[in-house]
Length: 271
Image (cartoon, rainbow, N blue to C red):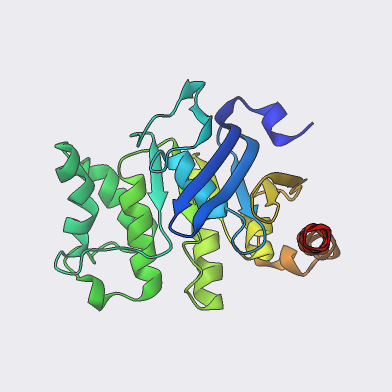
C-alpha cells in the first residue's frame, strides 16, 4: 500500500497538459500528467532538467492555467491562486526596502487581512529568526532569507506548501540545515508539501515519496516510497538502503533520457 492509499487525497493532478505558445512554435511542457498527493504527505518531484517540474508546481499553485486537465484541491477544481496553498520560490524574493517583519506581513496587506502576530512570532523563533524582525534582506545570509520566505508562506496557515528548489543556491551545509528545518516544521505543523529538487539525496531525506518525471513533455514515469522513519538524521544518508534507493532513482532518470534520445533519433531517421 502506498502513501496515498493510507491518506485522504489532498491534491490530485488529472491529465494535466500544458502547452506554451512561443514565437518559435508550441512547446508541450506537460502531457497528460497524473499524480495524487496524500494529506500531510511530503512528496518530492525529480527528473531531467526541463522536464516540466516547475510547470507542474506552478499549475498546482493555481498561478499557471493548464491547457487541458485539472488540479483538484480537496476534491474541488483549482481555478486560480488559493489561500490554502503557500508557495516558496527558488529565490527568497524579499523586498529590499522592507525589513523582515514588513516582508512577512506583506501578503496580509495585499489580502487586507490582520496578521496573526503570535503565530508569526512562533514561526520566527522556530526557524531561528527571533529578534531579527528589524533587519533588512541585505543584512541576512542566504539561508536566513530562505527561512524568512518559509515563514512568510506559513504565516497564512496554508494546508499545502509548494517549494520550488528553494535551497538550490545554498552551500551544502546550509542546505542540509534547511532540510532538517523543513522536516522539523512539518512534524510540528503537519502540512502537505510538494518539493521540487534536482538533488535525489535531498528528495530522499525529506520525502515520504519521490516522483520521477519523464523528459519533456513531463509525465509521471515512476514513484518510489521512502521507508525511513521520522525524524530522520543525516546518518541515514550513509546507509546502504539510501545508497540503493538513490541509485535506483538515478537509473530511472538516466534510462528515461536514453529512451527519449533513442525516440528522437528514430523520428529523425524516419523523416
